[in-house]
Image (tube, rainbow, N blue to C red):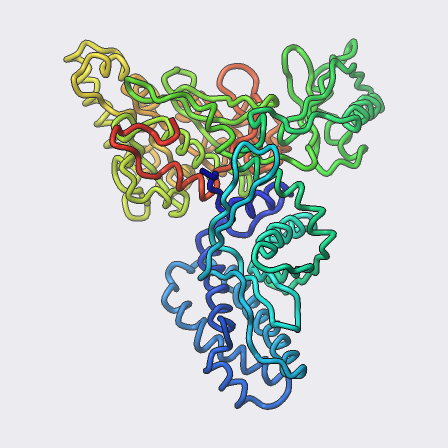
Length: 614
C-alpha cells in the first residue's frame, strides 16, 4: 500500500528547508487564507458567475471602471459578511486583516486584467480549473530505489487558466515572504501534478503577499528542480533507502576550507585553535572541532565568535560550545534539512507494559540519533522551555505530545493542556487522552487547574500507601487497576504569572509543591515561555525544574538565565535548540510535525488500545 503524504506537508517542508515562513502559523491567518481562496473560487469557478457578468456589463467601459466595480462587488457580497461574523476571532489581528484586504484588492485587479484580455481577444470568458479548494489532489508517485510508492493527497492551491490566454497559474495568498528557491520548489510540485492530467510546458506562480507577485517557470527550470523535490517527498514519506542514515549528505570539501578559514580568522584576534578531526554535518549546522592553543581560554573563543562571523561574512554568528574535551564551532548548514516526525518515529520506544512510556523526544543529534528525556528520572521529571517567536517552541511542544501519544494509550497517559493563546493545542480537542478539556486561562483560572493537580498528587500518595509503593511504576506493577501518567503542558507560562500578584504567589506555591513531589506520583510539568527573564525563571522554576530546552532567543542574558551558558541567542530557529539537564547544553534539532502526521498520531486506535505507531 502506498505511503500517504499530505500536499500541505510537502509545501511546508519546502519553505522550512529554505528558512522561510509559510505565512500560515496563526489561526487567524489560516482563516483569512481560506476566505481568500473561497472568494476567488466564487468569482471564477468553472465559469464566471451570472451576478459578476451582470455587474461587469453594467459597469462603465474601461479596465479601471471594471476593477472599481469588481472591488466594490467583492467587498459588498463576499468580505463584509465574513468580517462581521468573525469579528471576535479577528480582534487584535488588524494587521492580518489589512493584509488580507490588500491581497483581495490585488486579486481583483489581476482578475480584471485576465477578463479584459480575454474580452479583447474575443475569447469566451471561461476559466478552466485544474485544482481548487473544492477539488482535492490524489495521485501516486513512484521512483526507482524507493521502498514504496507515495500517495499525495490533500487540498491544493487554486490552479487555473483562461484557455488560450495564459499558462496554468498557481494562485496563493501568503502573509510570510518567500524566496526564489522556495517558489521554484513549490512550482515544481504543482508542475508534477499538472503533468499528471494535462501536458503543460510552463507554469506561473501568482502570489499575493499581499502585493501581487508573478513568476513564470520554464519546463527546464521545473524539471531541473524535481530531483530535489522527489528526494524531499521520499524523505517525508520515509521511503528512501537507508532512511535512518543522517545526515543525507556528508560534509564536503567546502566545509574543510571553511574550517581552515575559521582558524585563520580566530588567529587574527589572538585566539589559536587547532583542528581536531573532520567537520560533522547535522541537519541544521556543520560542527567544526578544535583544540585550544596554549594559553587560550574557552571564553576568548566565545568572546570573538561574533567578530569572526562578520570577518567571514557569515549571515549568522557561529555557536561555540564544548564536546568531549574539545571546542566546537557550529556554522549554519545550507540548505538545512528538515527532520520530520516520521523520520524519528522508528526511534521512539515501544509501548511499556506498566505505566506506558515515560520518555519524550527532545531532538536529533549530528548522527541523526534521537535524544530523549525520561520523565521518571529526577533530572528530567519536569521541563522548562523557552524561545522567541519563530523559534519553533509551540511546534516542539506539539512534537512532544505526538511522541507521548504514539507510545501510550489513554489508559497509561493523560494530558492536561493549558493554552493562553488558544491556538497551540486545538488539534487535540475531544481527544480521549485529555484529563479534562483544553484549559483557557481567560475562562478558567490556572490556579484552579494546578490546585487540582496537587490534590491528585496527594490522593495518589495515599493510594500508594495501600500497595506499599514508592512510585507510580511500583504501584502499577502491584495494583489490579493501573493509574495513568499525567503530563501538564502549559504554553506561555509567563502570561499566567504576570496577570495578578496574588494569583502569581498561589501559582508559584503550587508549582513548588509539584516540582518537589509530583515525579514519584507520575505527574510532570512542561512549562514554556517566550520570556526567560530573571523575573520569570529565578526562584521557584530555577529550583524545581532542572531540565531546560532553549530555542532561539533574542538576548544573550536570556540564554544564560535559562541554560547557564550563552549560545541560544545565535540559534537558527525552527526547532534548532539546546538541551540541558546534567552537564553542558547539547545542541539538537527538533522534529517537525506536519498536519498529516498529527492526524496519524491522533487516529483511532485498535481495540487493544495499543498506539498506532508501535
